[in-house]
Amino acid sequence: MSENLSAFLYLVASVCFILSLRGLSSPDSARTGNMLGMVGMAIAIFTTLASPGVLSYTAIIVGILIGGAIGTIIALKIKMTALPQLVAAFHSLVGLAAVFVAGAALYSPGAYGIGAVGDIHPASLIEMGLGVVIGAITFTGSLVAFGKLQGFVSGTPVQFSGQHLLNLGFAIAIVVVGIVFVTTESHVAFWLAVILALVLGITLIIPIGGADMPVVVSMLNSYSGWAACGIGFTLQNNALIITGALVGASGAILSYIMCKGMNRSIFNVILGGFGVDASGGSAAGGDADRAVKSGSSDDASFIMKNASSVIIVPGYGMAVAQAQHALREMADLLKAEGVKVRYAIHPVAGRMPGHMNVLLAEAGVPYEDVVEMDEINRDFGTADVAFVIGANDITNPAAKTDPSSPIFGMPILDVEKAKTVLFVKRSMSAGYAGIQNELFFRDNTMMLFGDAKKMCEEIVDQLDG
Image (cartoon, helix red, strand yellow):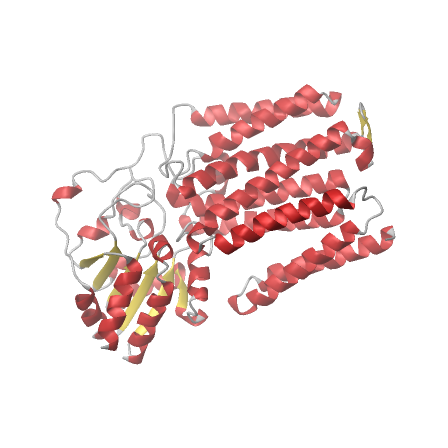
């Protein structure tokens, strides 16, 4: 394939990626956007395979078969609840790939057309240095995020004295070593920068609490894009440069939007340990002696059937129980009774951006019934019922009243303003941020203890009966 034709096809693939992002900006066009992204990726892959620079199709095919088989097995077995940690794991692989490509270019620059060993072009050394550092940070940072989401690592912030100074020291050391590498092409400096970046990835993400993990996942997505973009320059691949820049920029913009919605600083996200302080937050102390009002599915169905307005607040507990289909059936029955039903979505509900939107769309919930936090918060004061299913930290009034809380300052859904709050939860255990929810003990709150899916199914039976 000629160089001009390859450049043209890469441009077509890039346009597909841009149109894909545009399509994904709206639920109505998301399916079309997804298809355009797939078409663009197919064009990019086949264009690369047709390149005259390909040395061994056997190695490529073997790699595709191994990776495709692993991906297929994961796709068939993965549960919706595990999707956030899967995304984090994929981000780590992108970062690791950037490290491997930069290492290969360092030891065999002639294969990439960037010079010879000991005489690599200065611009290429800068590109390799940036790509490998961002890739290494993305790799270990994403592994920590995966561990927190999967439960291997505590969701509470892991902090120690002088933490930010240590991160600053690592960052300065990486810059210094990077300059040495660019000016001398030292292999020792290259791998030292990799080691420092790997450690920095851990120290940046480990202090971030579970309640803020959706923003972290979004930010790591941005990092993986910039890592791919940097390596794209090394490979002299326009499609990789454009795609990486799109992923990096869109991830950064999404992180900024989410930070604004959470009253966080985007700079603190990048630096790590944002939204928390070394003193730690308040825990669930002394709550065992506090009284809560407990109810049943009969109570819930009676209250909601006689309400005029019900706002449903889904959270990670709904995802764990796979209760979205039963929840939608419950909402349909309430609508048939003349009840106004809407779904309130917090920007960080679940474990990744848009987690609740995906689950509700899977259950066939109409897009017009799903309302973002900024639009629906003012309506809780006039709502008869707020039905909270599996959400915890995003409804905790401590975010507004307790300065020592790790979620203090984070905007929450004002469910406590509803006339009655029905809170579906398995137990009185603390939320992902490791603190108790003050909403449990409010006079207008009724706890519905049990599995979220089973509780919704029982309410459906009562409404239908």
